[in-house]
Image 1: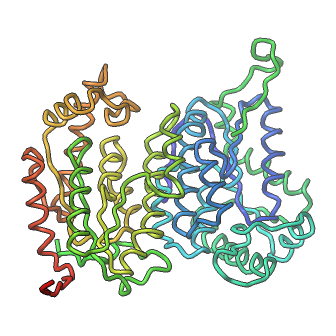
Image 2: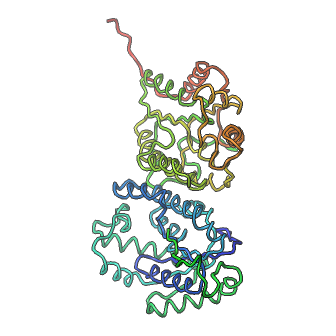
Image 3: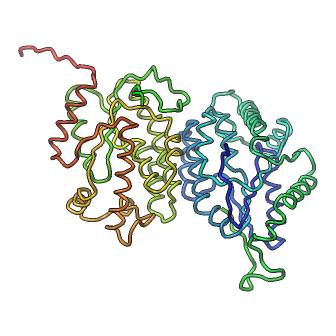
Length: 244
Length: 241
């Protein structure tokens, strides 16, 4: 059974997935800039960024009000808002939408938190299926080294502290991310992820991503996606890409 | 369809909740907008408390987590139907986990003004997939009774016009504009809502009550039916003072 429904719109949807510290955000950002430089209309959507839902999420996190179920539901609400008012209209219009995390993040993270796999997968059935889903595969220790070396404080839910896995934040984070990693690995084949070895250099990963984009959707982008004619700009203005 | 056991989950267990710990009574009042649910809930609460029962009354969009967020989202002009459904589901889950379940553990009578069925009906009336929303709501507990206050759309119109004096944007389904103005949209949207609720009556074992009767008569019927739910008795010893 297909989990997400394929779309027939002009534009394309490209998503990146992976645990924290896998380097996926860097890569999707480089990819979106490259596509933009080719003249495509590119939009960007980040996990957990709906203006309609933001305050509720913030409040729940700050006051530690979430259970696994409400955590899952509020993220689905956030995703639904981005889907309905941003991603789908833009893909319909012919844009390439690049998403940093997609429904698969919920499939991995919420299940690691203890909600039923079947339930959370059903919850996201309204999502359109991406044209390309990249999964940045990285060993747990490499990812943890990047994260723990790079910033000062791990956040409560990010470290899975709500699950009571360990008293120590870093230890909890390690266990929780390990569980999420297992979930990603389990669904990689089923979801048709294009797997990128995230231990390679940034340049090598980016090269691989671009190759895959060209192989998989290069022709269809060329023939159907919304594109600025070479050398032209809109109303003489510099095109500033939207971010939601 | 086999009769469901009260205080079991419909299809998905809620992490961290042991249903064998639950011992109160869960009573739901359902029905379309303006049908008189709130009045009945208030009267029932008073009656049950006089009988010596501890009562928790709750209703949609009252959760500590999402109540405010929903209110704000409805004030804007960008709330889409799927987002709205999931926002209400978040609100419901928060009340279920933090209010309803603890009250049931403590042996309360929980009176709910609209349960998952209103969320589901609104979603279905807006064209969303029925199986999707039914499965999403699968973590809800089966109530001891669902009383469905049923009314025709003409009756709702007269209640709105005579009672509140104006049509409400959301009650008229104006987010999807089912008609050229609020009256036409209200009629079409509420007709769809009633149809969706009607279709749940059998699978979810609603007790249908004719909302066209006077409020006092509806109340007596509800009292009679609730009395049969084997609420614990509070024995009062008669003493001569």
